[in-house]
Length: 234
Ligand SMILES: C[S@@+](CC[C@H](N)C(=O)[O-])C[C@H]1O[C@@H](n2cnc3c(N)ncnc32)[C@H](O)[C@@H]1O
Image (cartoon, rainbow, N blue to C red):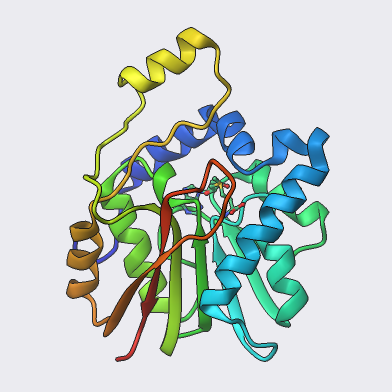
């Protein structure tokens, strides 16, 4: 979609969808596993080490965590850099993250509320699979690109192996029905992406370097998925 502007109708529809799936989102974010705090911390420690191995955040840098959820990565990023902001579409998530005294903003799904080229580093972890359409995914990439500095970097993580075919996994398909039938409390992943989707999107913008990094995380929910690092040299 050109111009990065979503219609209000679409945003409204998206919002109501997000409310309905908030319990899934909480599960996805590890929050509903809070009873097993130690496990959640262990997984996020592992995810964070892997992410930071790739983006290598410096203490002086300004960092944005898009779709920060309850702030598991945001809090770890905040331990390293001074200027770290999280943003999320879900009121529930923003509430939970701010209770942890993290710097977090509620997002309306449209233009990111930041000036262009504000952030040295942008992290978008485990968000893309939850986006309900390629249009919204494309919009998020455009907005991240607008607010990242020249020479900055954007990391989109927990993306499937580029060699695998991207399959739309929209709610309503057999996987969702099966989950319901079996009473599984797992998050609904709408979309996995074809590598060509990212290439096309980045081509439209002026990213000069795109790299896939194999994900070393051993936890079963992330094993076999890949990070994407985009270096933005304009
Ligand atoms: C699976 S959780 C991941 C949370 C966090 N990034 C983490 O790694 O723990 C996905 C998050 O993305 C948020 N989200 C979904 N669509 C979004 C969008 N368009 N913009 C910002 N956040 C979004 C959801 O509200 C949810 O908190």
